[in-house]
Image (cartoon, rainbow, N blue to C red; front, side, top):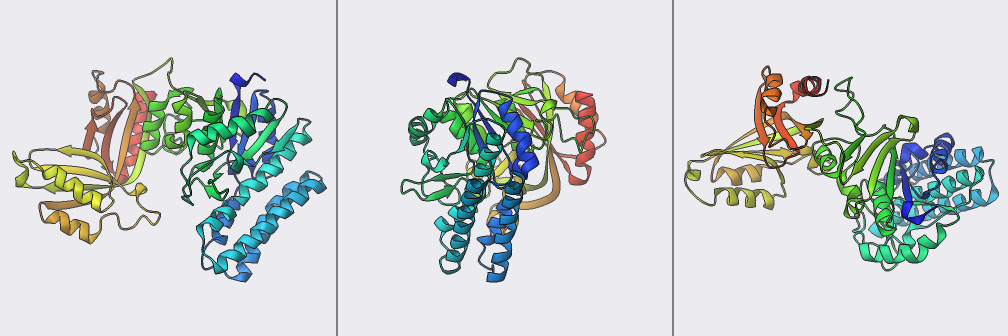
Length: 452
């Protein structure tokens, strides 16, 4: 393997769910001699069980049930491996630590203990996955990512320390890559005191990109359960097709407007180093997938149609806006005080319309527009709230400077009531706000017109 061709491969929970899935993924790894670092998630279902173990209202009886369920998932894989004693001993040690940590949480609701407990699923799957690779005749070992993935001490959503990770990866990880495949954990790191931290949601993709950046890898492969990024959600348009390559800017727009495959924030470290990212299905690697690159050879006007449901439109009307300064500043300051982020905005002389994305609100999805916020806004304008709306975004290139786009799009939309249109802020998108009930129909019609 040439180190400047190094590939970091990441496998999500469904890809390492059981022995058969791990075996398929090991074949993917071994099919490319340049794949030297493998980042794994916890086996499917394990993280949810661990999250329940950290909750305050788990009684002793339920705790034992959860620990048993986690152990069963690991032991089913060990049995398929022929129950090697050294692997069983390592897993037993991790399961016993899980039990100790979950007991500690009864007395001490400490976030550092929670993070260590939540990290145990990844620790188990890295031990098992490296055993599966060895079983196929290739040297491999499990590596504790906490040796190199340095973060701050913000438990639950730790911030990586980029320079420290590069130094530590050069010292401890790089020397191991010449003669073996290293399997390590996604989603976890450690602070300066060596305490386990977690990187928050999407943490395994993020870990893979951080390690690729630190090792100046050639590519990051994200293996999931879909064959790449599609022109739209195949459930909405049966003729949606996979996209062979896409630019980082387009991928970022798609994720912003609702495409679920990959969140651009998680691959930002790869973007910084212009490391290309591949997204493919571990269940069907022969179907290929999508390459996300800094520069792409083909940059069509229309790349994809994305949909984001559950949007709220806030309409503010005030005669004070007429030839006056400060109205927008006051409005945004009010929204900022209530921790509301604005998505799209259109203005006229006496009206401002803003969309708010409920999917970006807290995990309960509640309380986006509190009574106190509406009262505060009402002091300087008339407020109207509309919900049950959806945002449809056409993603592509040079949309703002290509003639004829609007006529094509509005030809499709003439049967539908469009509440808002946004275009011009980015050359990569044109957005329309429509009734939630019509959204799927709009996406399908646009896809037919622009792509079929």
